[in-house]
Amino acid sequence: MDIINSIKLIFISSLILLSSGCSILKSEPQLTGSIESKNLLFSFKNKDIVILAYQVNSLEEFEKDGLTYKNILKYQNYEGFKEISIEDYKKKNILDNHAYYLIVTKEGTVLQTFGFCIKDKTVYLQEDKKDDQGFTNKCHNL
Image 1: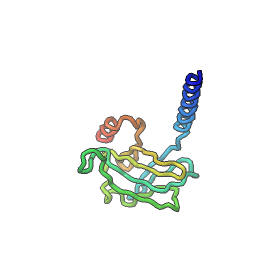
Image 2: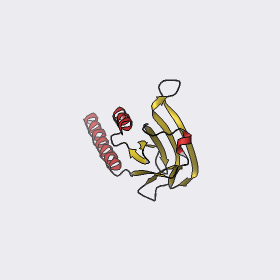
Image 3: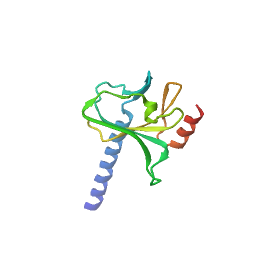
Image 4: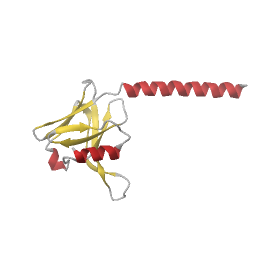
C-alpha cells in the first residue's frame, strides 16, 4: 500500500511541476531585434530583465568536430545590461540571409535561446524553436 501511495505522490508532484513549467514557458519574455545604423540590437519587451551574457552561433556552420554549431561571438558582463548591442555586426561575420541563434543568460535564468536572421535591415526571429532546418530555409528565401 505504501508503494502505491508513493507512486501516486510522485505522479502528482510530477504533474504539478510540469504544469508550473508550462506556465513559465507561456510567460517567457519576448525578445525584439532591430538594426540601427550598422548595429544589431536585441532587447526584451520586459525592461526589468537584466542580461548577464550572450553568445551568437551559426545555425548553418559547424565547428571542426562536426557536432557543435560554429560560435560567432561571445560577450559577458556580470554587472548586467538591458540591451544587446552588436556594433558593426557585418564585420563580426553576421551575414544577411543566414540563420543564427542567440543564447542569452539572464539574471535568475540559466539560458534562453532565440533563432534569428537578417534581411534588408530587418531582424526575423524564429517562431518554431523545434524546426531549425525550416527556419534556415526561410532565411535563405527571404
